[in-house]
Length: 563
Image (cartoon, rainbow, N blue to C red; front, side, top):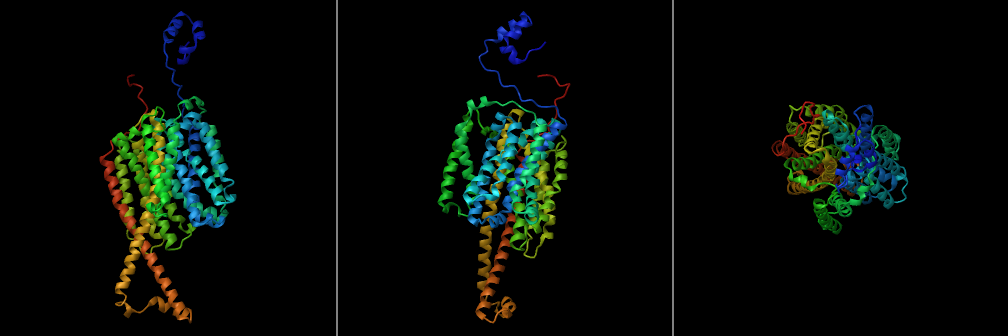
């Protein structure tokens, strides 16, 4: 008969029943003054139920991602249906993203306290329940408040997925779990545009909010069936990091708001952006200092001392920002220059999204071989993205949807080849006990990469468009007299539209400025593609040289000696 650790320490009655030797052992153990650590959570044997539970969390994360991307892409349609102005509509997205990113940093502590099973079910149900009243909000303020709460609940799900994939999957297929997590960064965002087009064009704009409800119901059923019911550890609140939460949450929200609203408000010429950047940055520094010394931190700052982890986390921000920019550039061109509706631009996104169902398992299988160095897979993926960016530098106002297909095919190869190795470098370099800490950090940086991509795209597009517009108008003014002999083709085409010469001249000027705007935008987008070429090459070299190699995990050998 064997006794557990707790029985050896506290079960004197049981010890007395089985003989004097155990009583003596118990008496020797009594002087221990430190409380025994909580028992590890139960890890079920790998099988059908575990697979269903993991897939349920994966579906819940995609549900949260669709709720984010579909409403963001369909914002113009939502604004039209709900009578929301442009400036108010920007806060609709900003507040959702701010609380979504901030909640990712603190989620691992809460699911470790309430158990993954209960926490994931509760947050998934809350995301769906908050979507029901969203189309009926009476004003913009209440809608933005609801979206902020929904963003906080949706942001709690990606860290759960990362932990589930690393904890419940056997070591030999854990890389495939990382590939499943990578779907939230490659498959989900690229599927947002086709879903928005389908719901709005064929079902109704309300379903831009309500699409999460059936997905949430299915994922909750799968999670309830497959995940183990770990015990609740309420006693963890005795050492809860209240100061870290009170400084970190507003700090992260402030910095994300700066990134999303900075370009619209002209950055530091705006008092709001200046105040948020100063106080948010100061609070974030205090938050990091507190995390360095607190006995129960939300994540461990000293991870950044590791060359491999620091390089992989910085690369994660850069790579996801690059993927976000490459996904945004074709859609912006097609909608702004060619006048495409989302339904017409959807095939461009599907070229990237659908191959991920094959590419992600394939790249995971390649990286799961100990003969393959994932750093070189990452470098190859960056070269694919660099080639896609180089092709984009040839952009002209004559391009249509078909001209982007080769660029998108290169992205379909490049995105999984970069995201999976980057996650391997950041997650597999640590032990199992470090999982919750690195999970919160990775997911917060993953969300922050989207904010960085948004800010870069807005700033670069506006500044390069203004530059090219100024140069084109200056060129026209300088050489206008030399071109008079060629006539005025715009005026000649519009001459028969009205007998009023003044009206024709006004329309001629409007058409001329439309051409200038389109050409300036095209040149600005081509400049962004050119910048991305060099950024991709930089990250390709960085990740070959800086991080140390990590190997895919393997179960311990049965013949290995016990240490």
